[in-house]
Image 1 (cartoon, rainbow, N blue to C red):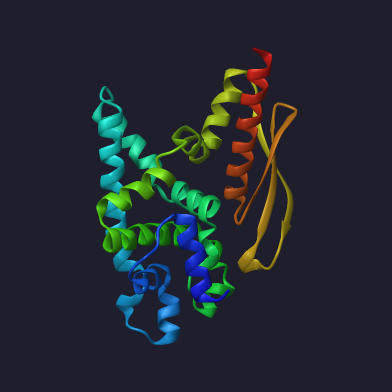
Image 2 (cartoon, rainbow, N blue to C red):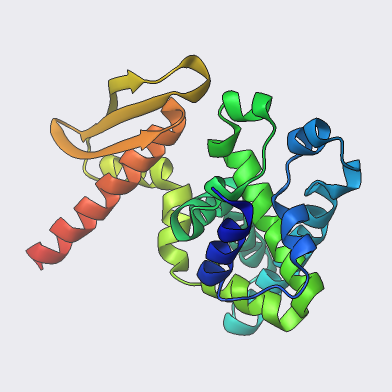
Length: 235
């Protein structure tokens, strides 16, 4: 993909046009890319991600404090942790922005599956928040966080805790949960796993992921969605 067209596409998804395009370049540049292009180390996303992480945490904290006036500090801390953790951020960045395809990677990191790695995608998402903060200010950064992180919170949290939530659902019914590996495709550095999940003897969902754990998480989430739909039909 042409870098400039990629930036424009990403801006359209974000709903924000950067005045300083260099900030986008820094936010998307992995250290492996910087090493290969012999650019300054400070031009990779790590420093701006550090800033974005702080903006994200403050924005989420402020939102929870203002939105849930009766929620104890301990519960707000747990909820914030669920919203800003790596699985949630990578899930948001992947499903809402398809962020992986815009990241600038070195050939080595590219060949070992870095474009699909949750840790990299979540870090770049935080770097993008940092870039928006520097380019447009705190209020605009908060607006983007509100639109992408603080909407549909229950489903985001349920996705992160899907395996635990499915286990609790099954236990309430006196049933066990079983995951079954259906297929495993691709080279060693870029595997795709497909997993089915059963509650008791009933098939409830299927999921795909770059690791077995990720595939199981997606399968558990699909099962929870199906279980909810069945429950609503029964009412």
